[in-house]
Image 1: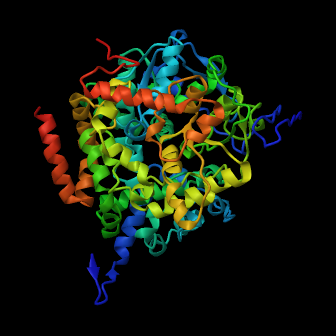
Image 2: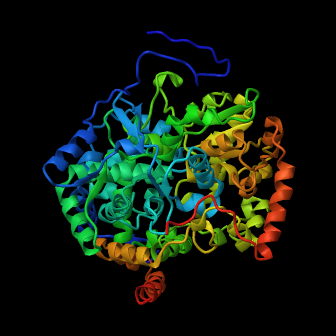
Image 3: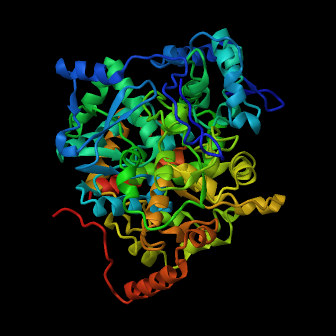
Length: 225
Length: 399
């Protein structure tokens, strides 16, 4: 990406057009973008609209405009405001899915390693590591006061004697601290093969190359075990 | 149209003789799936008699068979890592009812929390993970039961995409062959809350406490009823068929009052990414749009949920509200946990409320549960375990 003397990116129109074409090529696009009455029901019911500069009606209208310039304006922070709750899709009288469009645009942003996507996802890397390297997302040892101070003093409950408290849960799969449940290595290997074949590892490499290196080290270890 | 209103608090047990259709009519994907099976395109995990199915109605009045026996537990990342009493309460009920199931290590996350939070996957990746887990249940001869609402929403979507798009089926089939599996699709995608719903009268038979003075507010999870809305249980006797019946059904069956509040349809503020990396949005949403209306409008004693992310978000973000002078607090737990409490399950060893941050003790006291006794016994149990004692499990791995 090129930048002007003020640090503002100069993006050629052809590139913006390419992004729009990429979105349109997605096999879900036709299902998500239909007729639009511009009624605004989607925005009226949209939870993040109450707290962010984000409107599913605008998402849909910009896609309907087919104007690459307008669509490009959503590719930075804008697409990351969506909660992915799909309230918009449920209440749209024309069965559009602005939430689905957001998913397509986010995929493009990470696949192409956009700086905005890298910035937004930087604090998310710990979760991404857990999911892709071990096969589940949130482990008990992640729920610690230093990471969640706003969750109140009781959050410290998980930071003392965690191993024995987990051992007291009467399900053997849950009696671990570093994973949500104890995933078998053979199961992890299957997941790695899926991620390889579906291009998921490549996406992570594009959006966070250093995290990708760490994940690959773990993957290599598990595969050779 | 016959409507009978007998709940002073709201619409929960309003009855109607028509079903809400939300102005849409879609093809029933179930029929298309069976057509693909007949052509030899896919294998289907059928609900059999041995699964002891109970029929329910979905949004358009279509029938959905909910298997109640011989189940494969598809666990949730957030529940297992953060709200362990959620899956434990479910297993506790299944043991009480003598039902067969498997809970094992051979399961991955559905990866959909990650997808909706970060975009770092794609339909092929999501569908292949789904089929991989479905196939594991298939090879064991069991029917998969999904614990998480996001798994439920994602797997409903992946089933639909697989049925509708041959290219996706071909790609997923190729990947499955690579890992030694086949393309299989369950006849129905079933969420645990649907199991709880169809079993609610059996559950109510186990009730130990009178809940008639308990006011509950229900938070329906977005990914239960907003993703593939036509595949979600509605009941003409609950909210007159205008809102999903799951969770409300069991709460009413247990004799609690279900109160209405104006923001029932709002999400919890989880946001998938926001709960982890932009928490000021989640915090504000929880207090302004959910907890304060539940307490101020409905005088709620407990918030009943049906999903991992909602339970976490609504429970964990109340304490910080004090910084803004918000004093409203309400304990949060899933329908199955509330039901387990009502049926005499141990507060600490089974329902595991000790992991929750918003104070649940006043609720226990209102119900008449001696939580202090349970706490003392649990602390003694932890000491036993520290000294090398063995865990008393609800379930052991199959030999």
